[in-house]
Image (cartoon, rainbow, N blue to C red; front, side):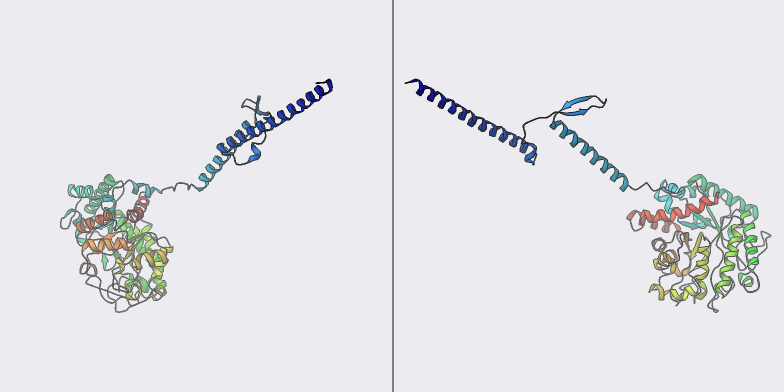
Length: 455
């Protein structure tokens, strides 16, 4: 082999080696890239651009103290992810704070109600006679029997009739001790109630045992007197009632005498002019309040238009809501607008409003829809006496009491059988027929008025 041929072979071999190196280099690089792509897929990275380069340029980062340190792109990506996550967490926390409602602040009355047992709350719904409380006839004192009865069933109030009221000091002692027992038992005063309208309905002034002046029939004041006379009548009654220890008077009568044949409120009403009745019933109420007596407007929706006597049986009005709003409801609306705390609902039926003969005291149409929602009243609703024939002749004591509370009444006055009525309401609450929320609404209204009496 000559010299030139050997040179040719050497050159050819060199080119072959170079070609082989290039070939092997490209294959290796492909495998590296292939491995990186597989690793990236396994790590959940979808973008190919994030893994094409194998270089790792340094990135300058800072620690918490501010000193610089060197990291890689991977470090930078992790930090960004952490920052992004922190921002997302902050956003979620702010959103949660924005959507979280502030806690509702309970009133003082609601706080007290929340601490009461269901049994005590149901007891507060009743106003009964001291005779019914102690199972005696003509109770004239408050002793151990009264204390024991209140401890067992702390009723919301007691109403005193003529036979219970024998002498000034006797009444003062009886009412004072009864109130003391109530405060000791439940932390709230007792509603100490009386029917003292003046004239023919006056439990105190109608008796010669107390030496006080009977202010006379409201019909006389309405026909011949002034608003000032009406207020003076309220002040007179308020003075002697407060002195004896009463705190609730079931007066004034706010009925408009639109039926001249009506004998039930003929002398008890201020008359047939709705404006006179409005002004004078408000005046009497203010007179009572000025002496510390809480008035009760009665007999919603107006007994003056009725035929029949609810004491004996059914009584009704044929008027519509529009008719009543033009006349009988005006004094009650005026009372509501003036801040009435207690309204008594009668047992009259209004078939052209309710569509049936259910007494107003048991009707959600009359109490909840008309009195509360339409007329805007949120004070205490108390029924008229449940002993009256319009109720007792058609309903048992427990049925009537449950229906009244379901209809929107807050207090039951003088059920024919108190124990049966109490147990009936308690059972209805436990069964969910009367929700505890509904019960709490009524008790809160009662407690609200009682707290105001202490101030």
